Image (cartoon, rainbow, N blue to C red; front, top):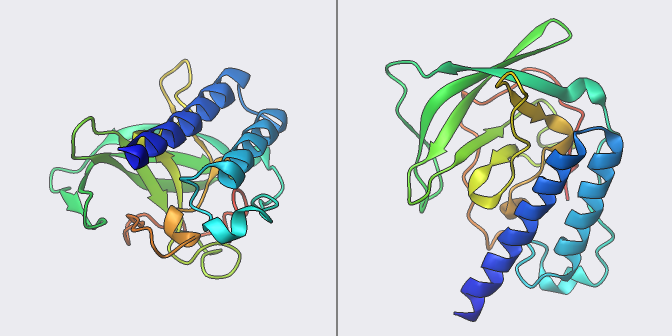
Length: 200
């Protein structure tokens, strides 16, 4: 029971940090405040993905410099009729519910938008890009994980906010004791996404 309550508190703090990020409306100051709170949770919380033996010396996660051109607004297109379940972690099953479509510098970005098929559900959007295995974790990063409160919301016109400056690594990038769902082959951006969290 203690572990369950502790994990619940960790998720509550993560979700509250995203609430504050949404309320601040974006920009580098909101992003820096989000990072500082996240680093404190990772440093001090018993459910931190950072291994316990490294927490005392944990100085915070490295990030690419804030780049406003990586804050995108995506239209969500319906999923294709043949879209089904996607590869996932052993204890999590996802299905595609749409395609998040955005553009940066004239280049289209199309990422499958997934839904967690278990109690409560939630949107989930992992991705891979050309920085993986070099500057970022080889398994990719996350943009949305509503089951854990990681969500920057939508615009007043209903577009999904995809701010890659907030892209972060799954827990398994910090410690192999965690099992994480990773981006499927269809969730790849064919460019260097030099925004968001750097490899631990």
